[in-house]
Length: 116
Image (cartoon, rainbow, N blue to C red; front, side):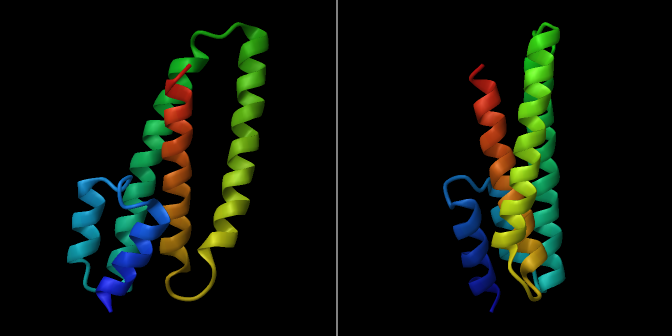
């Protein structure tokens, strides 16, 4: 059963995108609660990475650039919330799925901001 949850989690995040720490956490998890905790940790890490990338870009912007970047980030957050609510689904694994979806999108947003 645990291997099914791990397979689902890695499909959502993408096996090549999942850092070793989340894979290890998911592999050693014994319950759905543990899996959800692992996904929550991954989301926190991804959010910190995205925030750092956002702040790094923001500090170089003039007033107009700051306004545009803020609007862009708000639109991204709205999209992420809606998209991950859909992909999260329902049932006992919905929180884990939503966390992994949000982490994946945050990592992609951070990478995008890092190219600035």
